Amino acid sequence: MTVKALTDLAGMTADNVKELSAMGIESVADLSAAVKDDEKVKEIVKTLSGVGPKTVAGWKAALEGSEATETVKPAEVVEAGERPYVVKAKPELSPETADALAKRAVISGRRPAFKRQEWFRYSKLGDKWRKPKGIHSKMKRRLKRRPPMVDIGYRGPAAVRNLHPSGFEEVMVYNVEGLEGIDPKTQAARIGGTVGTKKRIAIEDRADELGIRVLNRMV
Image (cartoon, rainbow, N blue to C red; front, side, top):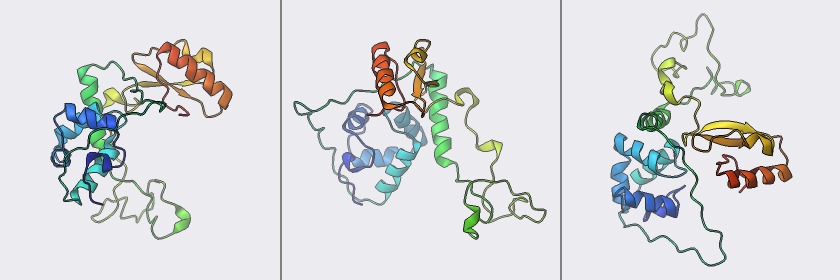
């Protein structure tokens, strides 16, 4: 795939283009150089709305295979009658927490895929992780050229563990009353999977009134 403009990249929105422009990234060439710098990657993940480490990794792969260096196309103007894009609410984070989230994003992008021993040999096993326990297992003995094993060293910073990638603390909600105790500055709602459409709409409407972000909105 030849990337001629930033909007050609998967997951890149017009708002992301504006956010990149504010960071001084105006063209495909600028972004290509930025994704090769770990510090810039952390800044991009912190700044761009709805962009995580996997998205940035996909951009890096696409840009490495492209030779285009055209400048950014101007963002399209929303026509009358179209639903305008609403910027998602972001939490109030301390500089230390924001830095830890960015570090976690970089670590997650580098973390290998942990797969079950001999997942490629026997399809019935599947590739879901299982710790090897055989007394002759070479993977268990961590010999060379064997798949990586789950290890505590692959974990992210403890300060932001269990937080949503946006930085919000997730709170499960099953009815409208469940929104009352949520702090919109640090917490966001996630509607339970068993909640029906009618009740979901009521929850989302009430969340909009309270200024609470819903992580799994229907639209």
